[in-house]
Image (tube, rainbow, N blue to C red):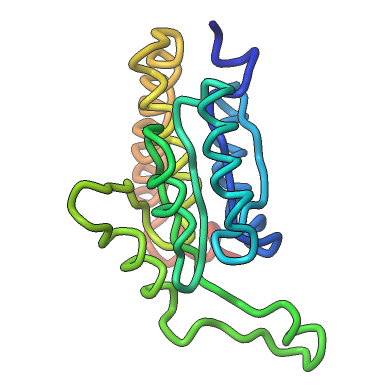
Length: 191
């Protein structure tokens, strides 16, 4: 079995508006050439589909499910209750696209994503869901890759290279900052 031939990660989200955040997971998995299958599954609007998806994920042999949801954020916990596959929850800051189309103003959650974060991270004892930060789906992609790396040594090597490149990038930026001074560095970096 190869991580690049058949999907080993399922990415699900409660709504199409979540796709803008959840694409971060897909981009990371694509970077590492990890196949994934992406779907919209609403815990509240399609509860039957949710249980069918859990069966589908097990039948397909998924190793990890990344589930993104905003507001009450029941999707990660509900999918975890239907399967033994590890679930990584991505709390999403809710914004209302429909409001923006009508008035030109986007409307954000009154809780700034904290509602979703707490909903996912505070699962009852015995029903864990790993949780990343609000809108941090890229971290969910990295975490899923780390889980798969336990089975695929090539992925482990790729992750080590990724970490080395991150390290070198920080050192390079630090040298630039030292040479230019803070004011010039900021002007050049963030213009």
